[in-house]
Length: 481
Ligand code: FRU
Image (cartoon, rainbow, N blue to C red; front, side, top):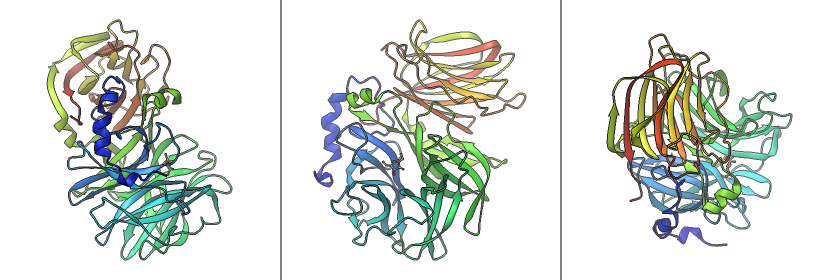
């Protein structure tokens, strides 16, 4: 086995730069590893001012397989310096088959990772610590720190960690599925992060809805409620529950879809930064074919840093961290105008843009933005709002004229009050689209236009006239230059 901790990802990135110079789909300002495969964000933490991003990484091929922990660090959540691989499998141990997802904690000043050691079909929690400010990591000799999954767990799927402290006691939730069916998060307690006692399920899902397994739980307080996020293998998307945490059990009150886009968002992780903000990054997986991403030599992108807050109704609100404004380059502004049908804006083009657009519905039944449009409109992506149903959608069915993408779910997302505006805040970065709507709803998706001239931006209204109150646009350059 190669020794990845000896390998300099920065050099690797510099060497590989030319290789991707003509890749029209590879994002330029979203975090992405030097090359090959990335999935979940891991171990997110701000340590002595610096943001650490670890990630599930296969540096050998743009596909799953043996997974390591890649590592990058940033002072602003936007510009990253690669660090050596933090964790890699050790033959003959609990993680011989891979170092799967986990978290980083401050254990009384000692940076400590808890991750899932994969070995054959077994998945068990392992611990590693760092003596040099999170650069190199030493695995605990007593790994795994839990010898077997609890009896009611399916046993083979027992992975990913959310850990918090109450008084002198650590608590850990681990994702799994139950023998009788149904995803669950199992709760354990420990005085020291090394010795764990099983308590009971923190939360156990409805087997009718989530037959299989919960992955990547993240559990945290929000206002006077608690939030449990997990990625459901049955539904293939992440879900957030807002509810009550009492007697070490979680009772959901509101269920929310986290993403109303086109099925790329998976395995989000959250952490509290030094400003006390709940910050989230998530994996945006590829939606093109496996052959295509293998051939491209990269797969998987991180979202922008997203802040999680709540409104008066106790619903979760998603907005981009204000730090992201530092990426803004050349700016264009469009004033109030009436929109009906499709209009491409002839002065605005691009595939690396931030857009802020405010609409009022007027008599229209739908309205929104056109992105990545070819001059003749045959290829285009539509980000829209349906006034009658409250559905928000990212329509990627015509993003690539050669093949259809997945459509957004047919569910209401947001109801406008009379007189209220709808504000789209968009980050477009080559194949990546991320949107926050009224700083409340989050949407994302991936597009792979076949035409190099699919760079047009426009507005549309259907069934009547809408008003575009204002559109602001900024060009964004590469974070790696
Ligand atoms: C989610 C996931 C996790 C697991 C990791 C393996 O995408 O399946 O449950 O720890 O990826 O790479």
